Every structure is written in C-alpha cells, then in structure tokens.
Image (cartoon, rainbow, N blue to C red):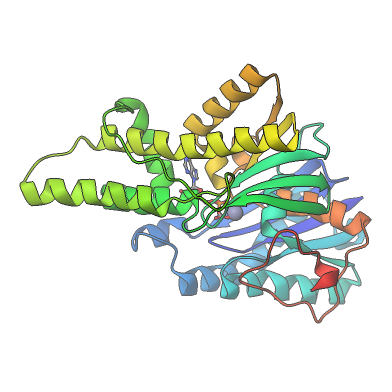
Length: 339
Ligand code: KG4
Ligand code: ZN
C-alpha cells in the first residue's frame, strides 16, 4: 500500500511516498528556514506564504521521484494538528483538494505521532514502547501501546526542550535555530563550567520544566554584560545542553523503570542532538534496554514520517472527508474520530 504524505505544520513544506508504512520511495522537503533566520525565529505569515508557493511543486516531485501517479496512491496522509494554524491549513486544503479530485481516501495525522513514526522507517520497531518526544513545541514522555493508542506519562509544564535551546541560543548570540547551533558549538566547550539548577516539578516525577533553566542562562549572559565580563559561549552552550539532556534522561529512566518498559524510543527535532543521542545510548546500554533513534534525516519535520503514521491510522480505520479542519493544538492521545 502506497501513502502520499503531506506536512506543512511549521517552516518545512514536505511531501513523500511511503510503501507499507516503512519503505520510503521519495522524501521531498522545501524549507523557508533561511528567511526566518533574519528574525531569530519562525515568522508564521512568511511560513504560510512559502508553503502556498511550494506545495504543488513539492508534491509533484515526490510523486515523480517515487515513479508514481495518483492512480498508484492508496491514501493521502496530511498533518492536521498541532502547529502554526496558517501553515497547517495550506497542507490540509491542498490534501483535501487532491483527495476530492482524484477520489483518494484522506487520512489526518497528528504531527507528534508522525515524529514517533519516523522510527518505523528503516527499522523493525513495533509497539508497545516508551517514547521521549522532544521538538520545538513539545517535550513528552509517551507510552505507545499500539500504532494508534498513546498515553501521556510526562509533559513539560512550560517551555519545550527545543524552545528553551532556541531561546538560550538567541541570548548567546548564536544563529537560529539555537538547538542546532548549541549542538555544533558544545564540543569546543567545557560542559561542567557552569552549574545550573536542577528543575523539580513536584506534581509529577515525569514532568519537565525548562523555563527556570532558560532564565538562568539568560541571567548569566546579562550579568556578565552588565559587569563588562566576557563569557566563553562554548562553555555556556555545553553546560546548558548538558543540563537539558540530563533532565530529559533522568525522567525517561524513571518512567521506563516505573512503567516497566525495556524498549525505548527517541523522536522529534531535538532527537538529532548528539549529546542526547549519546546519553540515551549509554542509559540503554547500562540498563540492557533496546533503543531506537531516527536516522538524522528523519529527525526534523518531514512527510515520510506522516505517510508512515498515516498508513497505520488508515489501517485502523481513520479517514476524513472535505470537512477536515486544521488545529493549532491537539493532545496526542485524542483520535481523529473522537474530536
Ligand atoms: O521537530 P522539529 O523539527 O519541529 C517541531 O515540530 O517543533 O523540531 C525543531 C526543534 C528546534 O527547536 C531545533 O532547535 C531543535 O529541534 N533541533 C535541535 C537539533 N536539531 C534540531 N536541538 C538540539 N540539537 C540538534 N542537533
Ligand atoms: Zn516537528
């Protein structure tokens, strides 16, 4: 079964064709990232305009590279939530039009479920497992009971890990996205140079809080500026990255032990982070757990992951008609049919 995936929730316009949920036949991504760098973050209006310009060309290329026409496509999977509403609407409306015009089933896919599915591509991973999802907008620990059943075990109380890395990077004067810049710079720094407070969320041992850590970095930079002191940015970046990764790993370890999981999965844009990948590997080696991490090219936003999850959603009976809407927020554990 061949699924055409379409993704437009942030600044990547993406389309892909995936066979039987696992075999990627094409994976095309156009990004407006360079333009957003000028503003230090994604400008939603610019992202929406670029999606509208790029989407038909990107979908056409995905079909061509997969050596397919719409006659070969069994369903169109599209990201409908969560994300920037104007950006999501471009993908959803394009998918609806294409589905109607070609009489192809339409399958709505939750963006974060898609990130988890990036691990199904080129691997033998099957649920159940415990997943740490870390992206620009989300930091969750989720028990994945089946391809379409999700239970939130932990979540961030304030900023997402990627958001905190991006904001800290901006304060340090690094290029957007800060998470990527911090990852690149950190090997040149001493990760024990700065000590940051360990955030504690009393309500749940699995929940995260990154806003205090982010404020601590911002204060460190501002205090130094006021005193006319210079800061070693590489030391600060490495120390901050270490603190963020330790928070993620500590809660992941606790959740896996308490909930009885020995199959661990990492997903989302921040799963590209070299420190997080290394710490997840050392944790799973120590505990004897199986670890799955997406290939680097599937860590960031892409449509192959949407097509992969779309395959499993379609098999479970999820389909939408022309009334499908986009949503800026949507819990991962809510199935489309129950909205
Ligand atoms: O999943 P994603 O592409 O978009 C969302 O769904 O949010 O994640 C983007 C986030 C950004 O915050 C970016 O800084 C972060 O992923 N990111 C990284 C790395 N690559 C991307 N953070 C740390 N290290 C990286 N190598
Ligand atoms: Zn994403």
